[in-house]
Every structure is written in C-alpha cells, then in structure tokens.
Amino acid sequence: MKHSRSSATPTQPSMPEGQAMLASAARDALREAAAALRVAQRHQQPLEMSLVLAQMARCYRALQALGPARLCLERALAWAHTLGAVDQAVEVLCLLAETSCAAAELRTRDGFHSRDEALERARDWAFEAERLAGRVADPHWEIKVLLRISDVLDRCGDHDDAVELQSRAMRLMYGPHAAEAGFEAATMQMLADA
Image (cartoon, rainbow, N blue to C red; front, top):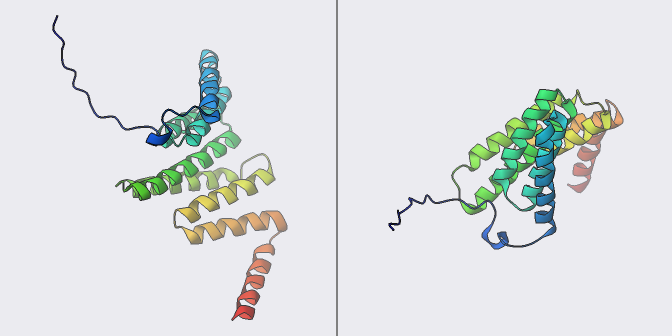
C-alpha cells in the first residue's frame, strides 16, 4: 500500500497560540451559537440569521479569532440588508468597525503588513454606520452608535472625525448648544490651567 504525500499548505491560526486549547466560557458560548446557527439555517429567516451570525462573531472576538469574527459579521450584514433592518445593520456595522480596528491593533504588535488595510476597513464600516445612524428607531440608540463609532475613529487616528461625532452625539443628548457650551468650558479650563 502506497501512501501519497499530501502537499500540506501552511495554515494560519484563528487565535493566539496560548489560547488554542483552553476550555472557557467563550468557547462554550461559541458552541451554543454554532448550534443556534444550525437551527437558524433550517428556517433561513433573515433577522434570525443576522442575529445568530452576529452572536457567533462576538464569541469569536472573545476568543481573539478576529478573522472568523469578521466573516460572520459580513454574512450577518448581508442578511440584515436582505431584511432591510436598519437597526440590525447598524449594530453589525459597529461590530465590523470595532473588529477591524482590533485586528489593526493586533497587527501593529505582530508586525503584519496589512495594518493599514484593516484600519481603512474599520473607517469604512464606521462611516457606513454613521450614515445609517440617523435612521435607527430609537434616538438614544443613535447616540450610543455615534459614540461607538467615535471611539473606533479615534483608535484609527481620525481624531477630528471622532470629535465631530462626539459633538453630534452631545447635540442629540442636550440640544444644539451643548457642543458650544462644552467647547467654551474646555477653553476656560485650558486658560485657567495656563
């Protein structure tokens, strides 16, 4: 009996090597989400598919498996768009932006060459979420979305855009004069400290 040699191609781990075999609550949650996905796939309901895929992505993120998390989120976004569910699409876009930003930060430490690509994806997802934020059902949710996006943009180095979104969130929270009042208070504090 002859054994044929397989041409094994190198694979890239989904998570840091130190966590690969650890049993954890995150792994249990991922197993539960995978079971829920199998059930959802039988029915093919867009909202259910989007929600389950987003939950799987959260589990992958908890395990630092950012590549599989991104793939699940991209599928979840497609299902949300199929349904026309703006709120779900915005949530998934925020998760995509946060995941891409985290991937860029990890690549910075690990020396990967695609850091800029991950940052650019994070910005794209963030700006898409910002574009849709005004269409969500709950105005309080819009504020939270703007603050989440602002955090992502700040981490990406887009400080001006981050401040602009924070100002927009403040105006939604406190009215049109909130940003001016905040700016004046900050200016007065800087002058007092000088």
